[in-house]
Amino acid sequence: MMNRRAQWKGAGMTVIGAVITLLFLFPVYWMVKTSITPITDLFSSPPHFGVLNATFTAYYNNFIHNTDMLRYIGNSFIIAIGTMIMSLLFATPAAYALARLDLKGKSLIMILLLAIQMLPGIMMAMPLFIMFSKVHLVNSYFGLILADMIHALPFAVLVLRPSFMALPKGLEEAAKIDGCNQLTAFTRIILPLAVPGMMTVAVFCFLFGWGDFIFGLTLTTEDSVRPLTLGLYRFIGQYGTEWNNLMAVATLAALPIIIIFIGLQRYVVGGITAGSMKD
Amino acid sequence: MSDQSYSAAAPRTSKRLRNTAWTRYLFVLPVILFLLVFIIFPIVYNLILSFQNVTVYNFKGHHAFAGLASYVKTFKDPVFYTALGNSVLFTVLSLVFQFSIGFALALFFNRSFPGRGLMRSLMLLAWMLPVVITASVFQWMLNGDYGVVNYILQSLGIIHEPHSWLSENGTALLSTIVANIWVGIPFNMIILLSGLQGLPEQLYEAAKLDGAGKMLQFRHITLPLMRPTILILLMLGIINTFKVFDMIFIMTAGGPVNSSNVLPIYAYQLSFTKFQFSQGASVSMIMFAILTVLAVIYLRMSSKEEAA
Image 1 (cartoon, rainbow over the protein chains, first blue to last red):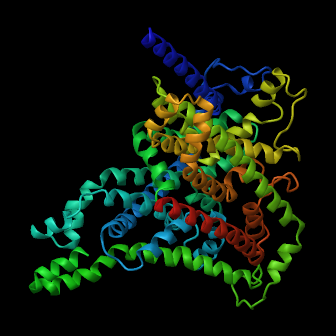
Image 2 (image 1 turned 90 degrees about the horizontal axis):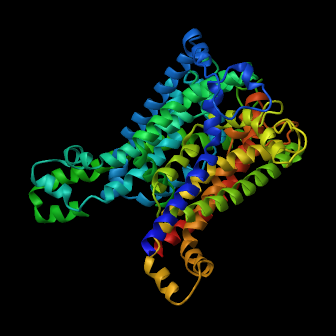
Image 3 (image 1 turned 60 degrees about the vertical axis):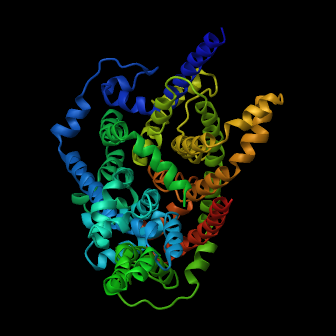
């Protein structure tokens, strides 16, 4: 009897949970739905909540007929992957050293990294613009990657450090007895064990690079290097009322995020809790 | 530490080990250089800029010291106070709703039922999407002529005529707050959920035996034990919400007539549309000062939590 009741209760909770989730995600549904609705149907009153006469014209218009968006997409990939690789390259050894080696000024570095995450992007954008215009880094992928690393790098170090601390003590000593030096002990023994933590960091650094808007806005003056977020923003200004076209671009910009999200979900949840809560 | 004990045991290799004593600093060197060149230097540069008078006209030449001139100018500008007030309103309202809805959802998803893992991670999608996407979707939903929000609110009898939510003075800021709340709910939920899952089960069982109901359990067990998580989450929320730029910039650009202007957008407008670099820098520095105070409180709290 009790068991039966608990089961019913569980099913009830599932239904309530599903309703909450679907209501909450309505904006995502509305985006995808609008992107496949013919433009004439968008202006019907009352609006259709379901999908009628689905069409992929908006996708054809913006990604096959007109190839401007493809360049923005390519730029976004270069910037996001660049941010990911550079952040991992810089952050991994640092996180290792901060976790396992005896360094002076360790706590100062940790506090700095924590504090940097709180800096507003706009506060960095202006001095970077002036600096970058002196060394020709405005309108360059490299400049945008460096700017995105301001946010990504401290996050990467802070999230990676605990995964190095979790490894058993004495690993390095054992490696040294086997003939490793400090560097090879790190690259051959420690690094392979930290791969899950590095995955989390890779996912988030990609997200930071892909989602960046403020540096794309302030550190570029030409379309040739601008990311997709800027492409979408310019689109809002140009085709203000062609909502199906706009939502098609938005959906495609969301696609890599959705794919990452489905494929690497457990790394995402881990990253959120690690990045905000632990030191 | 381990290096020292090692060298004491084997003095013959001390030369190689002294070598490793400084080589370990090589591991952190790239990060430290990056911090110095791309973060600390720009902040100092910003500070210096705020004490000069740099505009688009003298941008490349030599800049004279101008004292507090740009700060005085900022403090005399009524738009500064509008932006400051809006920033506070945006932050407070966003947080109140993100946090309370996030907490309610965390309590709900903390109970075990089939499918909860999938549901709560699906909701995270809202938090992961680039803000530009969220902002443009909300722009479309809040559209005055064909937006779905007008339709829904009218059918529910909440409003009687359609509104242009983003271009009316009274609703522009509110609209951006709604969009920002939507983004923040899953983040709050996940953090609170991970806190809830760390609470000891036995306390609730003991309370149940003593006849304490759900409300009493929440007030006397959940809330006190969750205090550190809640405090840190709120502080972090204040800091992160205070600096929101993209959402508002894309949805309203601070308009109409500054009714949704906030400090980050005000600083952007000064530096990048009016090219008043020094005044823009002064606004940045004021934001920096406010955030530093908040950050110090946050750091104190998180170290206290760690010690406890």
